Image 1: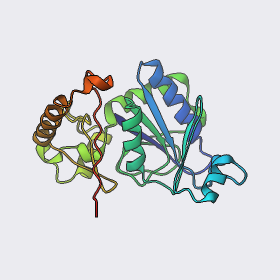
Image 2 (image 1 turned 180 degrees about the vertical axis):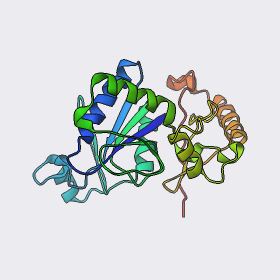
Image 3 (image 1 turned 180 degrees about the horizontal axis):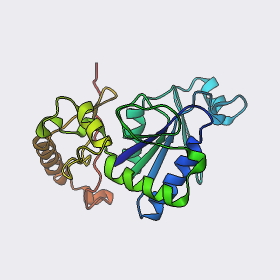
Amino acid sequence: MKIIAIVGSKNTGKTSLSVRIIEELVDRGYKVGSIKHSHHTMEVDTEGKDTWKHLQAGSDMVIGSGANSFVIVDEELELDQLLFMMKSLKDPDYVVVEGYKQYPYANISTSDFKDDYTIKQVDSFNLSEDDVVDLVDVVEKQSFGLIQNLDYKKYGFKTRSEMASAISQGKAAESPHESDEMVLRVDEKIIPLNDFVQAFLESGVRGMIKSLKTEEFGVKNLKNIQLLIRNKK
C-alpha cells in the first residue's frame, strides 16, 4: 500500500488533481483508496443530521453506513490512524491523501509549498492528460508505503525520514521486501517490524489459529488475520 499526498495552499486545485491521479491509477489496474483532510466540520457532522443527533445523545463515536457510503464521526484522527483503518478495511494498492502536508510521505505540491518529500510541483489547472500520465509514472517510482515499515538501517540510512526523503527524490528505491503485509499498532501508534519479527509473529499466530478449527466458522484460507489485545487494567 503506497501513499501519495496532494498538498498546497487553498484554491490551488488539490481536489481536481487528486481526482485525476485516482482515475489514472485505476485505469492502470490499481485498487485505490483516498483520504481528504478538512479544517472545517464535515457535512455529516452538522446540526440536524442523524449522525449529529447520535453525537448529541452522548455517543463517543458514530459510524454511519449506507449502500455506498461509510463515515466515522469522531475527533480529528491522525493520518497514521486513518491509514491503518484503510489498510485493515480495503488494503488498496495506493492511497491518495489530500492534505496532511506535515507528514513524511511523498507529495505533489499544487502551490509554492515544497519539502524533502515533494516529488513534483505542478500547476494543477494547466495539466494535460499526458502530464497526468507522466506524473503518475513518477508516483509509481517515488512513493512508498507506511514509513514505519522502512527498514532504513539495512540500506545505510540514519533515520526513516532520511530514507523516505531519498525515495521521494528518486535517489533510492523502496525494496520489494519492504512490505506492509503485517502491521502492528500499539496504543494508536504503528510499530516497525523487521523481517525476522514479521516472520516469527506470522508463523506463531498462524500456527495457533490453525488449531482452532476455524472451518466451523466458514474460515478456510486465513487471508486476513486481525488480533486486538486490550489491557485489562
